Amino acid sequence: MDLPKRFSIRTDGWVDGAIYVGRPSPYGNRYTNFPNAVANNPGLVFVRTVADAVRFFEEEQLPQIDVQPLMGRDILCWCRAGELCHGDSLLRAAESRRLSEALG
Image 1 (cartoon, rainbow, N blue to C red):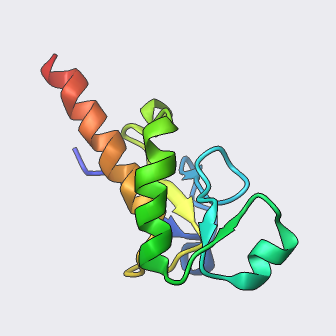
Image 2: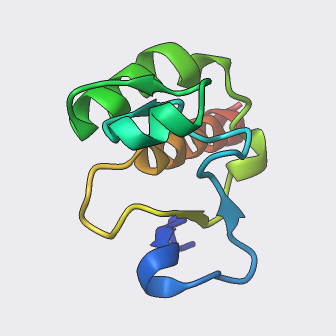
């Protein structure tokens, strides 16, 4: 079985069967390093770097997210391949849960 992948809407377009995990989906990261995004979206929190955005997502949001619907599924985000992305954290969490459930 191939592991699920994160696709970039910017480079790959909309991929059939993949789940969108960007904002404003239930999986979207409320932490951003884009000041203009915060100005236009009061629910977002500005942080200095992408690494901070991913770290805060993993610490603050991810524990509250039900990743079961993502298990075995490809995902879509706006981040380019090779960039840090909260979507990779979601994929790891979903795969960890899938393996845990498979092992009983």
